[in-house]
Image 1 (cartoon, one colour):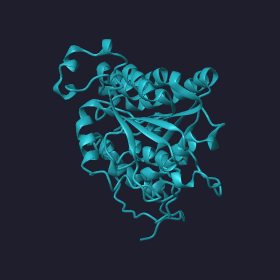
Image 2 (image 1 turned 30 degrees about the vertical axis):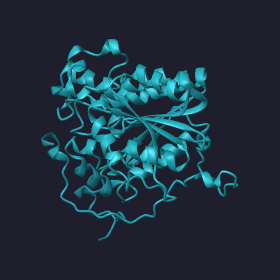
Image 3 (image 1 turned 90 degrees about the vertical axis):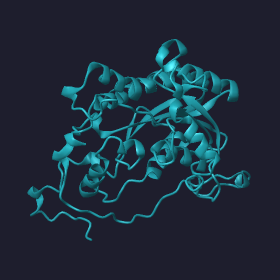
Amino acid sequence: MSSVIPLQRSFTSSSIQFDKFLTKAMSEASDNKPASGLPIDLRGKRAFIAGVADDNGYGWAIAKSLAAAGAEILVGTWVPALNIFESSLRRGKFDESRVLPDGSLMEITKVYPLDAVFDNLEDVPEDVKANKRYAGSSNWTVEEVAESVKKDFGSIDILVHSLANGPEVTKPLLETSRKGYLAALSASSYSYVSLLKHFVPIMNPGGSSISLTYIASERIIPGYGGGMSSAKAALESDTRVLAFEAGRKYKIRVNTISAGPLRSRAAKAIGFIDMMIDYSLANAPLQKELSAEEVGNTAAFLASPLASAITGAVIYVDNGLNAMGVGVDSPIFEELDIPKDKH
C-alpha cells in the first residue's frame, strides 16, 4: 500500500520454531470415557460462525478449533462468495485444511448465505436485489438467517463474528469520505450488534459470543485507514456494553479477540500485511509468526466452560506485540543488548 511506505523496515527476520498446541479433538468414541487433564469439551454445543469464505482466515481456524473440541459447526458465507465456497467444499479442495487433530475431517453441518450489512429484506436496495451475484440466493439478511437457523436447529450455543470490510481502507482517515467511513462501521462493527441482537434470543443460557478486533483500535497503524480503526474501536466498546446487556438478560458472555497479523486473503487485500508480519517478528516479545490456529484455540477456550467468568474482555493473541511501547528494531536501540532471534 503506497500510503504505508514509512513503516517499511530494512531488517530481515526468521521465526523461532515453537511447538504447536492443539485443541484436543473430542471424538464420539470417547463419549463414555473420562477425560484426562483439563480438556476443552464442546460436545453437544452448536456454533454459528459468520464470515467464513475460504480455508485460510481466522473464521475457518475458529471453526476448526470448535469442531476439534466437539462442537457442531454452522457457517454464514458472504453471498457473492457462496457458490465458490460450497463448490470448493464439495470438490474436496479444502479437505487438507479440514483435518482435525484426531485425523478426522471437520464437518460443516450447513452453510448459510449471509450479508451482515443488511438487517432485513426491507434494508436491501433494489440494485443489490437485482445484482447477479445475489441471484439464486434467498433469506440472507441477518434477521432471515437467524430465523432459518432457529427453524433448522432450534438454538445455538456459540456465535462468532469474523466480518470486516472497509471500502476505503487504503485511504488515510483525512481523505476518507462519509460514505466510506460509515460503510466500514456498518460492515465491521454494527454487523456484530445486529448479529447478536437477532441470534441471542436463540442462544442457550451460558453461551458465548466472540468477535475479532485489531490493535489499530487503540494504536496508530498508518495504512489501516478508511475508518477501519474507528470501526474496531467501536467494536471493542460495543463488546463491553453487549457483555452487560446480553449477560444480564440472556446469561451470554461477549468477548473479542485482538489478533495479530495473518497472511489471509482478506488481509492481503489491504496491501501491507507482509510488512506488518515482519514488524511483529522483529518487535514482539515472542519472535514467531502467529498462526490462525492459535487464534482458533483461544476462541475455543472462550467458548468453553473454562472461561465461564470471562466477559466484556479484549483478549490479545498477537505474540505480545500489544504490550510494546517502542519498536526495538529501531537503530536507536542498536547499542542495547536486546535478545533477538539469531539466524
